[in-house]
Image (cartoon, rainbow, N blue to C red; front, side, top):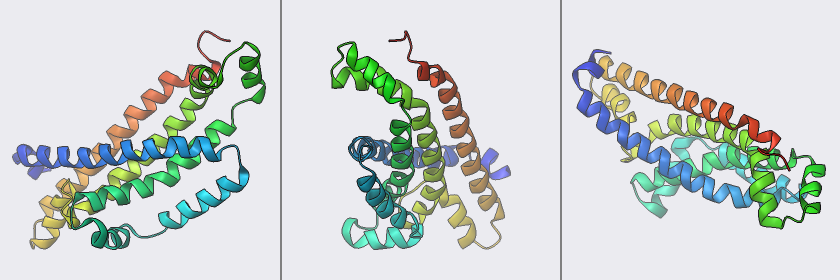
Length: 212
């Protein structure tokens, strides 16, 4: 704890690096996951196949996966970001598919009967209904990504993991190890709290604001 108080500038810089890694990875993962989820949600065969492949990737240890990416993308932050995207995909896609399949077909039919086109049904009915479950998936993916991003410091990715690895490399620097562990844990807890707040805020959307 002393290291955090005595070196706020260093910790803040590493925190920004960590947030950048996580933010870029989550944004790209969401951009890939949402259309993929919409595409496979209507087919049990495609869902099983895609989630099966993603689950296999998820079982690969993070260090091993980043090492496999280094020959393709180099020893830099992009190798870490791509690994984070792959890990987040299985969580996001599984939750998105569950959210879309959990929508009552009668509500969609009612919207169609009111003359809504596919885009209107998606934006005004399906997305509001699916959003709370989708946000739960994003929350879980964000927390997992924050934890795995710590390993990125080992591969020139920067972030709070540098405190942990520097502390291990420098004999007796347990202050750095504790500082890194506390900072990562605090970031994960605050992120979880932020998403729980969002989930509560968007919870009433399951009733479709304004009704059909």
